[in-house]
Length: 436
Length: 182
View 1 (tube, one colour):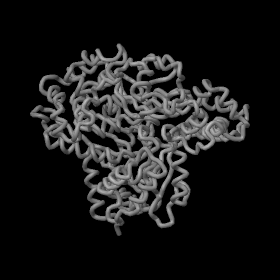
View 2 (view 1 turned 180 degrees about the horizontal axis):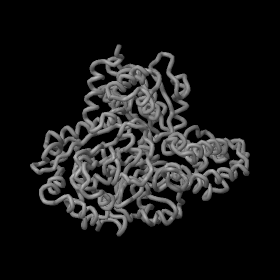
View 3 (view 1 turned 135 degrees about the horizontal axis):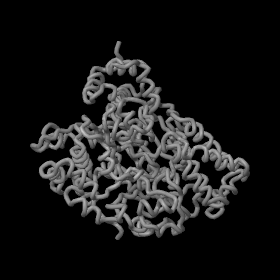
View 4 (view 1 turned 120 degrees about the vertical axis):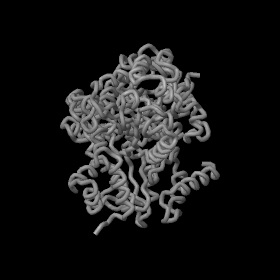
């Protein structure tokens, strides 16, 4: 089996969402060890040794991120990024649904390491039940003495506040998250200054992803060196991959980094559905470039996948079978970016609008070949020229799909409808929907 | 004359006092208003402003940015269907056209009896592993088929008005669906 269970080892245990069961599974021992036998700097150094990189998409080393905090400037704040909204991504929801206390313990360890008196868990508005669950768990942890003044008899005090968003993908970008948490429209800020220097309320702030923090109890308990021995040299540990699309068993699977993508597809996802063959896949969610069946033998390693022209991003694998129309997929993603553009900068605000208009006309078969060049021009005027990564990533999938499936895009021009869907209908005359 | 009940106002004050700066409580306060009124009325937002020591325009500017806040009254229940890639690959369009026919109004509309407001959304709901998926009154409903959608809508419609999204209703729906083998 490709599976390697670290974060998910207790998933499915009856009542794991309550503090008693979590403690019986060894919960809060990492926090206890950190507070009783490690200094904050020793925790930071353990995390640096572990080599754990951010699981939110950018893959920046967590220990290094913490060390950017200026010395002796207080208070500092910790923000937990639970604004998971990347198309295809649902791992943070699983981590919260299945083992919320693991996240709270990791949050407290991080808060101790950076000496933050308050940690904010910013959770997206759509995760309503998950927010209520976290709020209940925070109260449980408070009653047990893990949150509040003088935690476990130490001189470290920390409060945890669960803060619900209200529907905005951009709030997953760390500076937009901070603006939103301050009660503003969630628009990204100019960097520098980086949040580590000037973040929430103008104070030094660290923003970490849910999965990153869920790793911390294990890193503290078993040591950074042990963690670094799992995975590959530069992509250490495990990762939760959210697998969806045309596969037999969609779901969240934890595997050691370095595992070949094919193993994840064949063993955990049980292969492509309906006995069909794979046409393309996205390795890192809606923002990342398309990869082809020839890339299936690549290892799940952030740097190797980056070299192949895409990225592991937030760990969302979307598989598409041979009947998939790549223009339709591109159109839906472009619609998403247009809807989620915050409107702060012109290339993104206007560019996503033009992109969406062109893609809709292309999918309807109304675009001319000349106008297809306009699509490339628009993407070229956005990529690398937007205020934040949202605008850049709004072009990555569509441009990579245009390159890899050039003929399919051209075929749509002036076709008076979607040629791929027409072909599918001819193959399976009665196919109204395609839901297996 | 206040439009917010003393309970909602107390909740907003409780939220305000949780944060180092009162303004951080804007989003939670707007949620409290929406849960009471069903949407964000100008009067409700003005009361939030008063309680958080802001101006009404500051609160309204925030409210209009976020897609989950409603600026007008809707049906008793809210249905949100994901049409992003993972759901589309597994039949979201079929669910959308089924809902349109079943509820008799286009996306964004409210049924004639005022029971349901429904809309399709390109914002991924984070339920790709159970695609196609939707949310009814904030609760996930996954692995949808037209029959399953019908069963869910029937149960929701039959729920007493006093408890629009209580846990017992969702438990009952889950049990009924399991019994029906869906």
